[in-house]
Length: 512
Image (cartoon, rainbow, N blue to C red; front, side, top):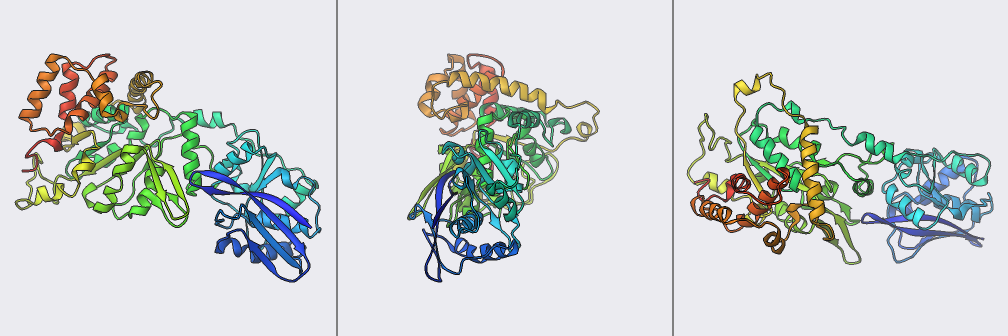
């Protein structure tokens, strides 16, 4: 007899339907075909042990398990449960009237308990698209899958529960999550707030501009000046995630197995801060079975690189293309996978190895040429993709001890959201452009028009400060964001003047 069950394989951030066919016939061997990897092949031992634990048997006949389509590689241990169900049906130990109406996924322990699996959300989305009645999976993954509506999410603790449910002996209430309720209640639930930061008003202003226009930022300053503290608070002033962005972000974290037990929809913008010893693959993504890296895990959020010059140069260089294209393409001999990577890059660095170059009080002890050599660790093409260069100075004692209440993240966020709304209206109908930072050069000339006084100011600034040609477009983009924050339709001279301040590293001789 041939039995059919249905599972799914995750490729990139999407899932593909896998049909698990089990045939029990004459003979004594067990065969598994359809490009299974080692973890899938080993399921025979787990399935056999789990079946025996609950009083069922592994057929002592020829058992053929086919995972179709046969040209897609099947990886991981999440096929244990559908294989076990197929074997029980094909060997006629149990009759499942509605077996083919459900997607089934789960890893079995030797005592038949179910362990959580990765990539549940894209699998549930695929199941709904294919018209399945429900999705049977480990209970720990049920909250995550229940984000998808119009699909019965049946969370089970062990193999016996799944068997009894499909036999019709027991009823299991589908897990239901009010996605919108969770989403809207968690939107502003941030651990860090700008009201905790005393002083540093100029840096807060730069962060507000960066958030309003989606600009990348690099902060240069001595140790202890507050660079990391300010970066951690940036997500709290970014515009709230839309429901579509939240689903997209949750899918990526689900595929990477980063959601945790009983996790549901991600409603807050992600903040990722990898250590400077990170490898190229860990940052960008990849591996034998391509997985999302840190830049994809920070999609729709913030990627913070602390001590930028300490990162390996090869690691920084692989970021250049994702910063431009907002996605990562990982190519292998048999497969090419796209991971989204639309993130804000926030970097911080000391101005020199000792950390005190340009410090108002402490003296730099670095030798001649050392400062320039340190700065040169960060390549020009990478800096070219960073719009704001901000110098961070230590907070003065009187500011630290001041009782004046700093502005909260929520009030800054209101201004940022209004500025973003103006940009959404401006770029309506433009594919893949949502904010000022995404404008290509030809669009900058059309949108960022400046008057004669502005042109004169920009010309003087480029000549006197020795600004490079690559700074020109960046200054115009940033000045347009400043104008949006001021609810102004045109770029005024004061907007340009403020934008010019944020190009420290472009000044000739800054480090010499």
